[in-house]
Length: 170
Length: 99
Image 1 (cartoon, chains in turn green, yellow):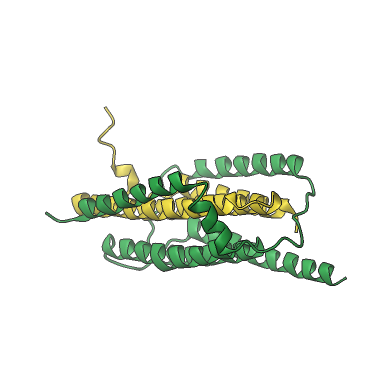
Image 2: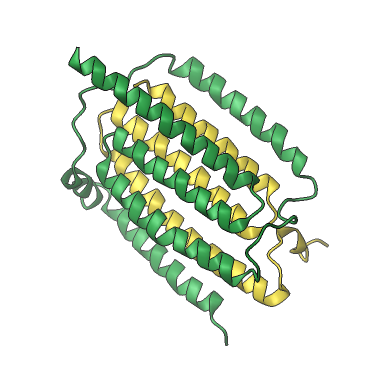
């Protein structure tokens, strides 16, 4: 009885957060103001962090908040400020033939939803799954997936050096 | 919770991101749409990780977050360079590779 109540609460929470995320994502791709798009993207990323908590992934959720909402959004806002003199609404943000995008996105969505509906009809996620601890995640990263971790370190180093070299005035 | 709820949320976000990549002309907005796509991938990875009771999905989600951060850094540096050279961030103006 208690477990089913918790499950209902989880479902309600999922539905509310998912609706907020979809609305935010639609505003990101339709708004006429670049700064507003960045702020709506914050809503989507925070909702994604909440979904990660629902999926028992607390370390990934915290990382999402710190890296995306903390660092990437600041980068986006800096990029907007540096490449744009004014901050108001603009008319010239979309391509000339933007209407091609709509049928492509709708067809892609219909195909994916049909495939998912066929594949995982009403499969339930485990209700009483234990929360994945930070220790387990770090055991994975520094154990079985050490080589990708090294490769990723070099990717980040190359990206940092590349960004400095590209953006430097000489 | 159903597995399909999360997968369908991921699919919807992915398609919105694809729509943004196709429709937008401003380079910063295209980068934001790519962030939407990468986030939908992360939701799928974590949902399957919970379903299969494994930790691998968490590891890959963290790697995706790190790669996305690197991509945004380099991407915004390129946008900045483009703005400095031609005072505009419209992607349709980069047509010099056309013969």
